[in-house]
Amino acid sequence: MQYVIGNWKMHCTVPEAVALAGRIEDGLEDIAKDQPLPTVVLCPPFTALSAVSDVIQHRSISLGAQDVHWADHGPHTGEISPTQLKDLVQYVIIGHSERRESGETNEIVARKLKAVVTAGLIPILCVGEKELTSKAASEVATELKESLAEIEPKTVPDLLIAYEPVWAIGTGDVAESGHIAEVATHLKKTAAKIGISDGQVLYGGSVDRDNVERVVDISELDGLLVGGSSLSDQSFVSIVSAVSRHG
Ligand code: PGA
Image (cartoon, rainbow, N blue to C red; front, top):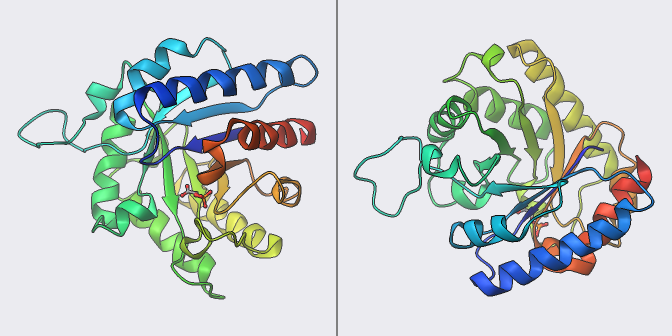
């Protein structure tokens, strides 16, 4: 696996975020003495991006934003544009189910994806079925296709697709390995058919330090998107360590 991404959601004041990032960085430095690290991306809230970016010295930590607006600038009170993020982050989460719950459609996701790619940032596109179903693979493939509707796929050099079954997020229930493998394979095939030859698929949904060993064994996956467990440096560093040991 190549990626471990921590989504801090609406947690941490600025001082808390700086302290957490610092402890994670220390933990990663310890791992790096013995093993090569995956790419680690931290996604703090907007308010802490600048301060966290100042403390991150380790070359293996990158920063991501949790959302973005599609416009470059304009009268959009409370929104943040890709241009404003460009100096702070390399990655942007788009279409997280918690955004979709508040009305974000595939059409909006597609506009955001286009804006992020145009700005030269790397999108982390979230897709996932709402309820556990045997049709999950085709449901998320439709979400993927509709989210890519605004872009010419060949212009997307890097696309991280985060497969996050909504029913698994924050519930303690990690999807079965066979289910994750089946959906990941289908997402990769769908991306390839559209013209994205190297779509990377990450899994997210209740990954923690206890179940990570099972998830890292799923060879179809290229990484993990971690929510709750990224708020504890010990848990998050353990997850990175498991990914790193697994290679
Ligand atoms: P969780 O969140 O790890 O707390 O389930 C994952 C996510 O929402 O990205």
